[in-house]
Image 1 (spheres, rainbow, N blue to C red):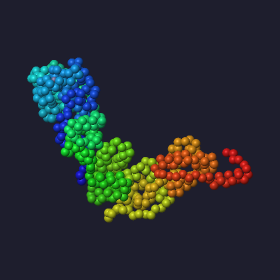
Image 2 (image 1 turned 90 degrees about the vertical axis):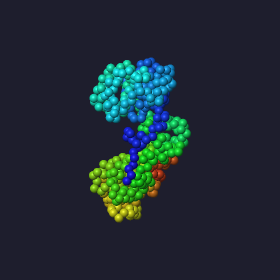
Image 3 (image 1 turned 90 degrees about the horizontal axis):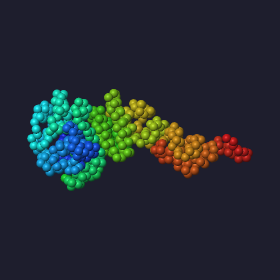
Image 4 (image 1 turned 30 degrees about the vertical axis):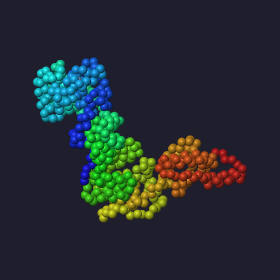
Length: 517
Ligand SMILES: [Zn+2]
């Protein structure tokens, strides 16, 4: 089975390492171009203008948020001889040009994560005493500084304690908690934030225009959401999903693994269509084909998570996805202990198919079976084509914790059109609660729930006053709307005097009396 790729990336993920040409091309050349890190930008520009740059900076924050780009801008600013009044480097002097070409030997970039990086730190202390070769200052950028060994940290600390006037340090890390306090306290620290989605989309749109790319807006948005606030990831994914100068949502989905394995797709589509028996057959099929259902459930959860991220803008979808994820998360716990491997998935699938109904009526499942007793439906045989034990029968006969169900009955007869009389009886207080006008609420409170005829709910009253109140157009409308809110079904309201009361009224008429309450 092909596994479903998740939407987030581990550092150095091949997807992200492959395409960085555009990222390099659009790397900020000025502080002004730095995206989403205004606090860093302002403070550093002020320091440059006032000539008070620190000898040691520590940049921390998530990957791809501009730490290394900023470090290079600072390095350039340290050596630029003709900065503009805003503090931006001129990009014209010899040092700026060498920096931009990557040929300035006095900029030393060390990747602490590589073995070579450790060695470089070791002889850093010796070399740092020598004057710079070309530029006025030597700048050391140490990336992923948290990866240094203890001896290397000690060597670095000694250097930071008494740096030569010509030396500057910029340390960058994604894991600040792994950097010793002694190092942190020697540096001016900046926390880089995740870049917000709007800024990412704006930047991608800008690059699209510059590169003459025809980009679907939804594709840009999906890329931005998947990049979790990282500009590098966003641009890299953008570049990787370009096809002949076009950016299509479908390609982005494909590359992100939003198109998962067949089993996950089939189950998902059955749930979307609320096809319970189809969903159960799919689970049974996976079981019979010998798939590990625990593993499948993991992949299915990843698939659902991808769908959730994809649909973040649609509140109704988000609620549904969260509900489903919750169901299948629970299933994964139960899958470890179940005697019947299909059962936890089947329960989750059944509940998922009834999304929308269960939320509107917590007692929906119990109401389901009461309803059936009142209005028996013809029993339909389970539709599974397999020769083995039917998945439908498993559910009905063994999942008594989830469904207070009668034994050995299929689910096809489940009526789905509306609540039963018992449902309405149980939930009448909730219906009354939902009524806005106090007088109508009070009047309905005095009513007797008399019956349910198809979709007509019948109430009886002992008082003409309350009957008239509820029978008014507003009264009926309010009650019908409250019924719909609680049960998710369109129901009509019919009101009548109760027989007992009619008799009383007749008596009063005959004897000309008056009812004293
Ligand atoms: Zn310059």
